Length: 264
Image (cartoon, rainbow, N blue to C red; front, side):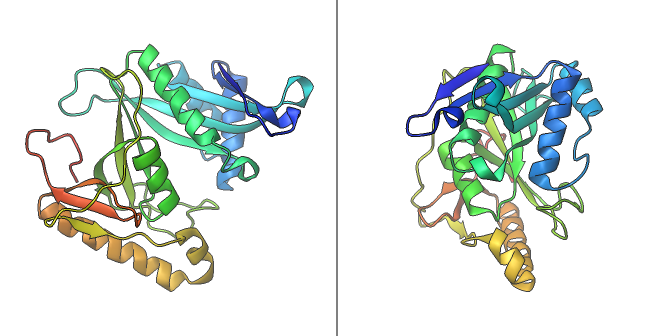
């Protein structure tokens, strides 16, 4: 369990607790929270979450408030995955983590990921992986800069066609990222990258989520163009080395001495 008190908030909103999931009731809370965030019924069933937990997976429920005033505002779920190339220990794959819109931007997402990292460290995992939509600029910044994750690759239509309130009608292209756990005392944030003369820059739209609501043709064009640029970079032996200050992906010559780091 993790608890924190943030100054400047009403007392009932100040206390945040992250509780590790163990029971079927916890699994039901995680599933319900995901349904609220993604706007779909049974995004992940409680039974699947429970089965994963009993086989070494991770789940957490995030509460805000104290005593009878506490309520669920977030959740996370991760499965035990196969070891990554070049690694000896197990990998924890974070399938989903989300918070209610009313608490977005309050730092709870970063708390969830750090709680997940600490749990993985305590339970002998070598790495954590997860995916995010490469068109969503704020997610790119959160994952690559704030959390310090490393890009492993670009996956075209990774989940197939999704039918939730966030991704309906979209090709589910995703960036797969890695977070090192073993041999690291704590995760470290990354800084923005200054592109070299040999680097390739792949742009992100300012607000793809709003664009999808107002101009679907243009938003679809962003997906098509970015997908083609990542594929060209892959064929050219380039890898993502970070973000620049324009929130564009910077790709450069692959380091052949570490093929598991940033390979597209």
